[in-house]
Amino acid sequence: MVLVQLTAALLAFSGIAGLYMVLSGDGHYFDVGRFLTQTSPYSWGFIGIGLCTGLSVIGAAWGIYITGTSILGAGVRASRITTKNLISIIFCEVVGIYGLIMSIVFTSKLSAVSGPELYSKSNFFTGYSLFWGGLTVGLCNLACGVAVGVSGSSAALADALDPSLFVKILIIEIFGSILGLFGLIIGLLVTSKAADFS
Amino acid sequence: MEALFCQDINFVEGLVRGYRSALLTSITYQNLTQCETLEDLKLQLSATEYGNFLANVPSPLTSSTIAAKANERLVSDFKFIRQNAVEPLSTFLDYVTYPYMIDNVILLITGTLHDRDLNDLLERCHPLGLFETMPALCVATSVSELYDSVLVETPLAPYFKDCLDADDLDELNIEIIRNTLYRSWLEDFNKFVEKIGGPTRELMSDILGFEADRRAITVTVNSFDTELSKEDRQKLYPKLGQLYPEGSFALGQADDIEGVKGAVAGIEAYAAMFDQLTSATAGDNSLDDHFFEHEAKLNKRAFLQQFHCAVVYAWLRLREQEVRNITWIAECIAQNQRDRIGKFAAVL
Image 1 (tube, rainbow over the protein chains, first blue to last red):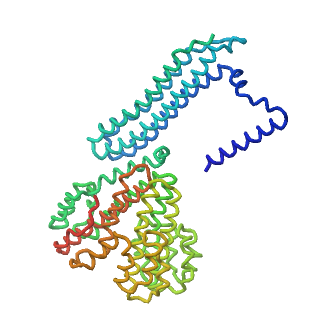
Image 2: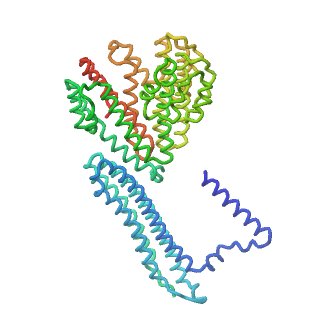
Image 3: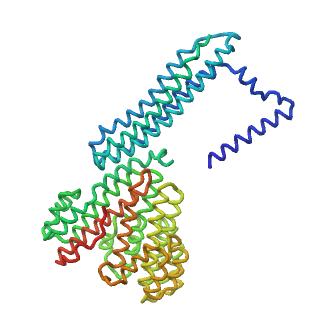
């Protein structure tokens, strides 16, 4: 419901802005080419780095709270599960670390360039690759963290009931945490050919 | 999607699943049915989750003491869960306590009409349904006066709007009031559960629908030799469940058990129950026993899904069934009727 209202508001706003521009003779300002060639590659790069860490951390935190609450609840009666099920929390945490590592790798490509040399083709390539690489890593880690969290919660409840089930559900969690690695690999590949800003 | 936003109910769900793993198994029930005396029963129960719940009870152990102590355990577990619950689970659990409140209110009104002692009545009230202004219910003259003075501040207030016109409080009217309140509660709870959505809605609407059907059938069967008119009876049927609307209309026209059987013939589960009732082996299981079994089956299903509120409701009902089973076994042992001792609905 809220999503529908938000989309409607956004459409209304952009519709009014667009109409205003067209009707007041400034319609030529809406120019995708101008947007792409005049936006600083720095903004693309930094937004990418921010999204990488930010989304990864959101995924890790989401997974931890889903699994952590279940471990606490099930651990009231079956306190033996609390130590073993920390593995689920560790898997979720690792997702956040992937994001951190990738952001550090991305920041190594940053350096200060002033004047019009900033808008060279190589710098645009670097800016775009940092943005999309960071977005890829962030979204993959978000999905991975949530997946590991949900399966970790089920693992805790199953372990509390019957200890032999834990290892079997852990295998499901391992498959889930591979998703974060996918993002890591692609993020590295995407930014490997990008030269530093110069 | 409910798995992603489950942070509020996960802890309570873990607790409840822990409680549910402590329900008595069939092996324990076998041991219990083989006990010779109530002291043996106490010994067997002390090896289970119940532990020393009968430790401070004076020597001649009765089955009603066992039932009372087991209920105390149930109530303290439920209160612990209720303390740890936040929205929407806390409203859900409040809804779960309303039927006990209804029973307490009716108990107090009936008791007052028969001039029983106030403290005696308050002791017999179910602890899950207590509310603050309960002793004031004992000035029972008419429903509207009770409503204005006491009941309007309780959570049961919106359920009274259909029975404020019952002037004199005689036996029949009190039963009508009880059933009207229960019907309003069922419909309200169903609406609340529909609003929550997700697996809570799926599971609870099945469970509440069965409860509505069971009420409709029980009211019909119990009203056959009374002065309850057919229109009044029709008003007591809840507007939910598999029997609504065609089945409950047919139930409203029924005059005897054959009519009831015809009315429920459309629904396989109930038709099978009535077939077993009127078949050659009649007398083994009454209608109530069949209903308990079916209810236990529906409640066990709730534990197959995660991240919903219905586990708490299901656990509460299964635990109540367990207490009923223990009471049944204790009664059979005490009265030495060992041939019927195995006749209880399995819970696990």
